[in-house]
Image 1 (cartoon, rainbow, N blue to C red):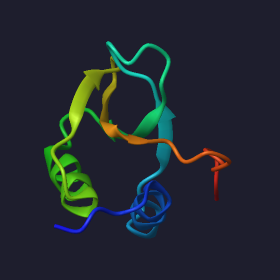
Image 2 (cartoon, helix red, strand yellow):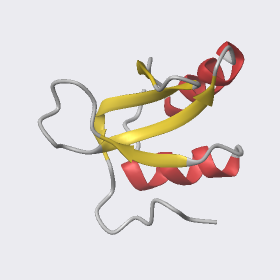
Image 3 (cartoon, one colour):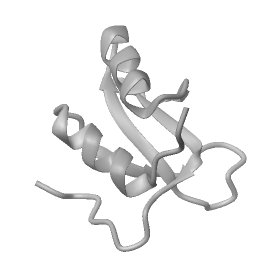
Image 4 (cartoon, helix red, strand yellow):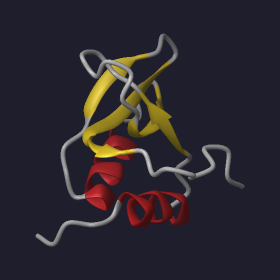
Length: 84
């Protein structure tokens, strides 16, 4: 599989109605990567996001939902996290 640029991954997630955000998960020591918030119990959305990204996500519970994130995909420098 051809490696995609982080900017391209963020754009594809947005195109498919996800709201990408920067996230620093456990053991990342402040490094930010691409992540998406998933509502509790929405396993289908996790699978869709993984298909779009082309990799299995790491997950952290956020209480009412989950953040699916990819530690190997650094959040793009200069990318606006709150893009409309």
